[in-house]
Image (cartoon, rainbow, N blue to C red):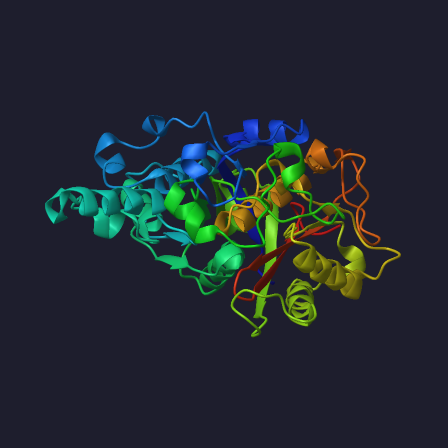
Length: 413
C-alpha cells in the first residue's frame, strides 16, 4: 500500500494573525496586514507598502537569552514552530525526539541583525560588533535554534530557492518520510524583510511602488504593478497518515506530491514561455496520480508583476484549458509575498481549505477589478464545494518553479 502523509499541525505568525485559529478567521474575514512602511524604514527604495505582523510579541515565544542572539525572522519562525507542534499534539519535549526532523526554507535570513552590526562596525569599530553576528544573520539560524529549543536530534536542514524554497523543503520532507528517516517532520519557513538593509536587497522592478495598501498588490489584473513584500512564518507538522490517526491527531490534509523545475534562463528576467512551470505542475500531478480535472482549487504564485502573471496564466491554461479550469485562490493578497515562507503559508492555507471545505478569498482591494484571461479568482469565501484536491504553485527569483498537490483527509474525492 502506498504510504500517505498527513499535515497534522499548523502554526502561523503572519499579517493575518498569530495562531491557526486567528489566521483562518481573519483570512475568511478578509482582514489582512498590508500597511504603509514607515519612511525611516523604506528610505529611498521606492517601496511603500508591505505585509507586517504588528501584534507579534516575541517574548511570549522566545527567551531573552535567545532573542539577543537572533532577530525577528527567527522569532517569527520559532513562534510558528511552537504553535505547530502544540497543534499537532506531539509528545512532550522530554520524550525521544530522534524521530522528529526540522526542515526549513530561507531566502533573506537575519537582515535586521546584520544591519545593526554593520552600523556598530562602522560607527564604533570591530569590538562593538556582537559575538552573535556570525550566527544571527545566518539562513540556518531558524532551523538550528528550533532544533535546540525542542530537543530535536533527528535530521535538520535548510533549502534555499527564494519563493519556491518552501515547497522544495516540503519535497525533502516527503523523501525523508518515505525513506523512514523520520516519523514526524516540522516543516516551515520565516521571513522578516522589512528593515532598511533588507528592502535595499529586495529592491527590484517586480515589486510595487504603490503607496495605498488596498491598491499596491493586484495580481492578475490590468492594474498590477508588482508584488509587495511581507513578513511572517508558517510551520506544519507532516507525518505518516496512519501514524497520525493511531495517535489520535487531527489531520488537516494529506501532502501527496511535490515537483520542481528551473527555467535556466536569466537571474532576474522572466523566461520567454511557461514551459518549465507547466512541467513542474504536470510532474506534481503525475506523482500524485491526479489528472487536471480532479484539481478543485489552485493556490497561485500570483507575482503581481504583469510579465510573471502572464506566464502563470499561460501555465494554468496549458494544464487545465480555459473552459473547466479550477478556481484560483490568492489569499496572499492579504499578507504580501513572504519569499520562502510564502509557499509554506499557501501550503497551510490549502490544508485549512481542504479541512474546512472553504476556498479563502482575495483581499477586498481586488473587488470590482476584472482579472486577465479566463481566471476564476475567488473574491469571497466559497463554502461547501466538496474540495478534494488542491494545487499550490510557487516560483522564486532566478528561475525556480515548484508545485505541490494536497488531498482532503482520507484522500482525494
